[in-house]
Image (cartoon, rainbow, N blue to C red; front, side):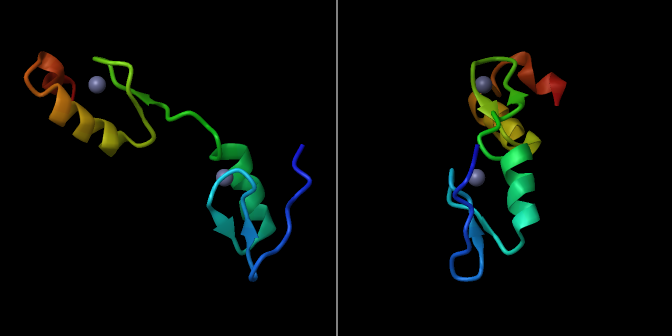
Length: 73
Ligand SMILES: [Zn+2]
Ligand SMILES: [Zn+2]
């Protein structure tokens, strides 16, 4: 339960990370949908996970480009 949501300099800072929001509802959405959520893009070739598709692609391109990994992109 989060009971420490208060306004600082006109914004609501997230108590768990460095993000902050002008509107409290956006902070609630962030806490519910984003903050602390595990990156969901799993590299099929190693344990690395990425939050965004494009960062996973660049990871695969950089780390696994010598394998057949490129065929899945
Ligand atoms: Zn956060
Ligand atoms: Zn990988």
